[in-house]
Amino acid sequence: MSRISPRLTPLAIGLVAGALLVACEKTTTSTSTPAGTATTTTVTPSPSTTSAMTSASSAMNKAGDAVSDSAVTAKVKTALLADDDVKGLKIDVDTSNGVVTLNGTADTQAHASKAQTIARGIEGVKSVENKLTVKP
Image (cartoon, rainbow, N blue to C red; front, side, top):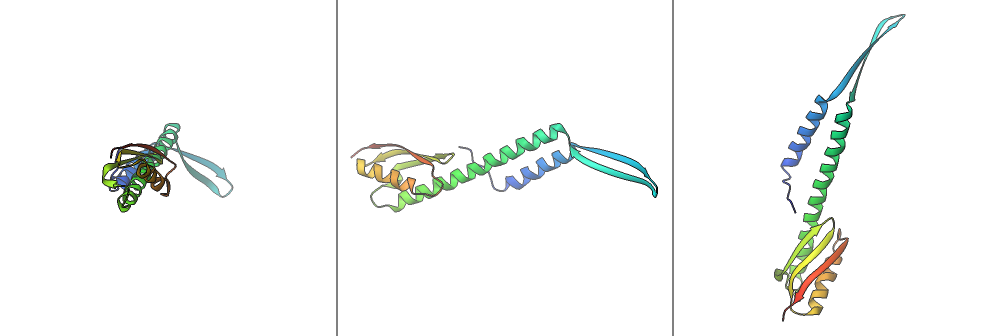
């Protein structure tokens, strides 16, 4: 899972916005009226800019998902560490699109099941893949 620096997000948004503004099409229309000439200027994104805006939006959504997954991972790990039975230090937690995967060892099957139950109870968890092995 990639990690995105919160400090780079505003810079990336600024660069994308600047690039999009450069690629706009500017249309000027002059119309004769009884009072004189009226000039209207319209700025619209070019087709390539519209495509770029869609791609940028998709990239920002993926960045948001990565941040959400990191937060879910941290919450699950914290909850596992707080439980006396589950030995959270022996469990690795990974999250992708809200799906939490537990890897590592548990002392008993009951502790492995409890770890899964704890993970399911965390906000933002869609499902849990329990790959814990029992090692007494």
